Amino acid sequence: DDADFIAELIDIGGCSPELRENQELMSLFLPLLRADFYATESYHYDSPDVCPPLRTPALLLCGSHDREASWQQVDAWRQWLSHVTGP
Image (cartoon, rainbow, N blue to C red; front, side, top):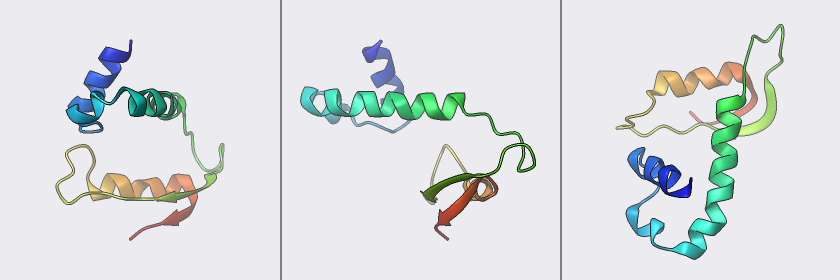
């Protein structure tokens, strides 16, 4: 349900309460965000031997006070991707 999904987005810092009030933007972004969540939750990586790294370009970012992922966790994505931009 949209209300629960939006509450989760706000809780993880992915959506400001002010944005929630803008119905036009929410109707635009909710399907995109749901697709992103589905993609990350349903993707299963085995190993480079079984499943080669994704060939999509990726920009790796991590905030200095990121509560969700350390730089080491973000940097570990390099093994899963073939085209990485970032430090």
